[in-house]
Image (cartoon, rainbow, N blue to C red; front, side, top):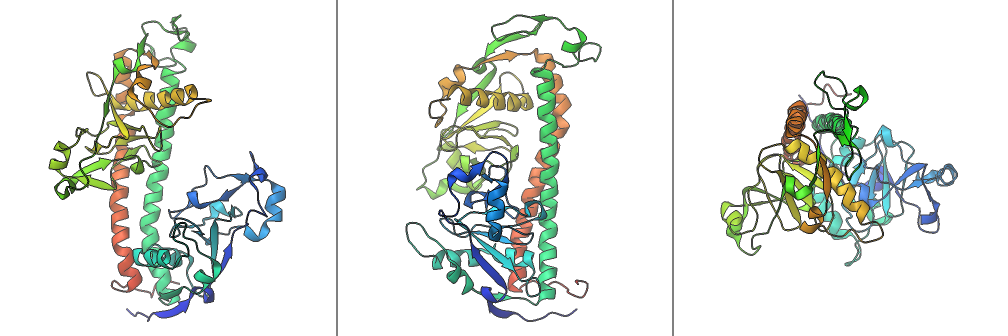
Length: 423
């Protein structure tokens, strides 16, 4: 087993740094409904770019802005604001563009492994240094000169590839779990719609109810299956608020109880890990209960209308509500009906500012109420999918912790990897 030494080098010697198109080259009016995504700062911060809400540019502008195209292995960096945010371009984003608020770093593959360079920029120590050298106190910013002069201490190319392969293996497992969860989410939502919106739940013969001639009756919300009713949302679902322990009391914080806030919402159904934790004393000193696993959380202020499911028992702050079915545990149904409720609240807010949700908003919601037996059947049917999503989410938290622990040790050389088998 052999290992090579580090060498110090400026970034400009191993990569090309390019700023994005500025306002004179790309205007908001250039964005279209169908076209090529252009990545901006808001989409950065994870290994893979997140472009689902990215603005799009036309084919004409795509050709005009050819110098700003992205290739697999490019790094896209935030140029202003959160200047330490970085993502790695995958084959899925080949040909996308990056905005004027970003920097593109294109590694020289003969000198540096692209994934290795990305992981270097994930080190807290380097991220802190980049924030320090950014110019401007109110709105920190980077430029090509600052980045070109950045000095990095890097391994030999063979060791770079071995380190990148080790860390990427963990990230690939996380990504696979996320893709699995997306499929399960779509399945759960499709079954919910089929049963409770299209009214094609299984009848007593196992056939789709409505299309098999199931009896429908009139209601204030239109035709519904016979035996169903119309109820107020809060007559079916309990809505509870939260609260924050005094931030100045150290006995309340850094405990074992996850403390959910709007910042903890992510693109997955479940949240199992939170930014902050409180102690048992902290729980006693705030207005939140310890909500059990599968409680549905909805954000009421700040980023309004985001929904998450508790992956383990959690407390919540005052910017959230906790939702549970009255009488028994039927939380998978609660989760899906809450997603529909948020869409209705957003629709009601058309023309107004949807900047907060209060309890009377839930009181104003009227919902179609199936039979309790059917809700139980849905929760039983879909429980395996939800449990798998929850387990994948917990597993991803563990994988991320392992990766984040290994990352600085591998990059610094504290832990070494064999290079003989790496090409």
